[in-house]
Image (cartoon, rainbow, N blue to C red; front, side, top):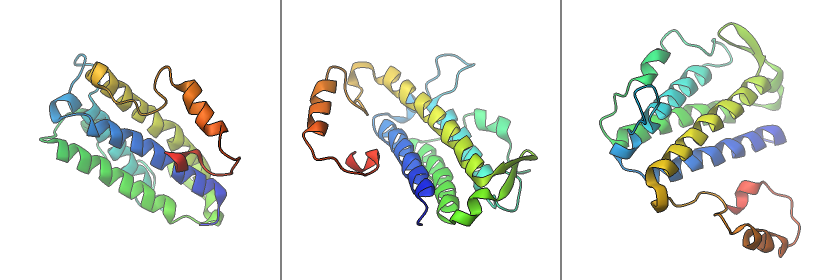
Length: 184
């Protein structure tokens, strides 16, 4: 893939997926199902929703509407998981579908018109729509993980009080051009 937009988008999505992955590593099954109340989503429910969205939006996305008849969005908000492995398998299935769709694209595809609920989007617009949607939910997952683990949380970014050290290490290196995720 020679397109810098697609390369950058894929790297961004991989980064956000990794934040979810690193959160799951810190949690057990019960913690992934925790809800502050019955109107709030657990990490498990957020995973189910994100995967459902990915499967619907990116299966046959160039030829079918992104809201598939077989998707039952309301069911995504009912916890049916029996293990942490089930949650992670669902998470992985959504990302697998999504990344396969992105990797199949060529630069000429970016202006192709596709539909989500009968609303036309260029492929670029559809990618950008998800570049807002998926990180939004990953942020919820990370926040809930941090809330659940409290002082036992392993920071996924620059820890509090360590910005000067982090910046010093960055500025001690030669200038380079690369995606920020290549140093993580």
